Length: 552
Image 1: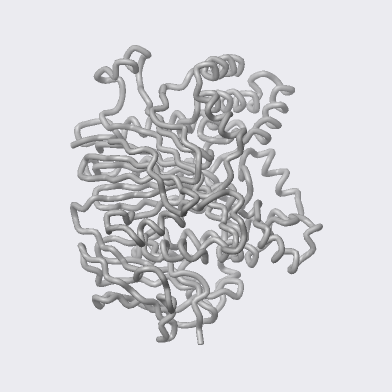
Image 2: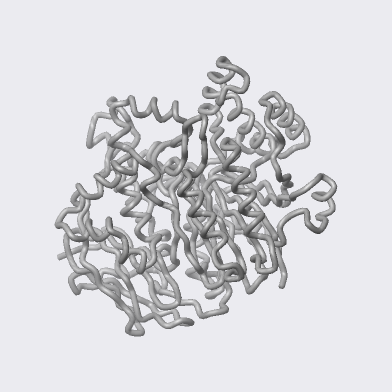
């Protein structure tokens, strides 16, 4: 009899359809049955001996929230017997409903229940408790996970013991993940957490990778990549990382129509074992990153979410260094400017913040100039060393891409048909803050004079970690990075690198906040509000910030 190994995860959902992801113990027919008669079925497909299904659910009625069950070969496997949680539901929003978007990044898997958690309470566990106990108004319409869903390079004690029983950890890559099977261990550890498992079964999710899904500072530079490719273990690690990401995260990001048109998905499902097909795809993605698009779009009523790949889509050659390759940049531009007047809020999900603390931004801009040779060969070698040691690889480390994104945001937010807000959602930096840009001259920025910037309210909203450590060095460093003294120091670095000041200024208007945390946007018509919640030791979420971003 087929058993449910992992899931269900409610992934895509709109007013009439949804997808539910599961892993089963053997080949089988997977089915979702909703209490109101909606549902769907799908056969599993096989990758590396594992059996998965992404079940399309049709017949949903806007404005309803039917409970559902999962069956494998006709036997009910979800809800679990004796579950303490309410039934999992598929909420189908009605036109005009509020849209609630919860987001964050950097979730290191919780240890087993009988072990002390070394990084404190998990914000997703706390969110699950709030949703399970609270009114329907506490349930997000979508959970946006902005990278580092698993940590291939920072495994837990339990996983290290599992790895040691499988292979000799004295051999590279040591106690890090080496292959596809070991990646599946990370997903089990993360998604079998009881609270998180239930939460992901009842709240739709959008995901995108960041560096730790593969390795810290993935694709920092061309020199970094050359060094990695020279190792004996990198190729298998990367291919396994891309394959497991496609299976566990990417497929669920796509709508049913996109899945139906996806040639790779059809090929994998069309063969008894899709491993070779998927592995060949991952090898092509490694050889030519521009051949694959991991970025995607979700429309949530009149809210448009663009999730942007800022890792695999990079151009690393120092002479043409870019956060996004030309095709990816054009895709982002086309989606942001599509159908003027058709959205009230434009959300750009990028794991790496666009607007950083000023000293960090200036240090990255300066370092990029050094690495490009602006101050000679010796400074270039120092710049590459510093880039790797200090993780200087955000948007500011790709100055042309930073300016291009700034211009696109201004264009998308300008005009009579502009959205009310353009909000950049990010994580990565293990603290949370709100930063607001201003365009034009200093005087115009100070007065927010007419014509000094876009008509939309533009904000950088950064929230991390969901569940990870926050060393004292991070707390002190980022607090200092926002200070006036740090800003003066940063300007000196920029002058040394012979770089101009950025075309946009910005100021921190909220934070910094440190803790395991989540932000939630509530979007109602053309109004927007923001809430920051932190996980407490008692398992509850504590609201530490509430603010109105726009009003109708």
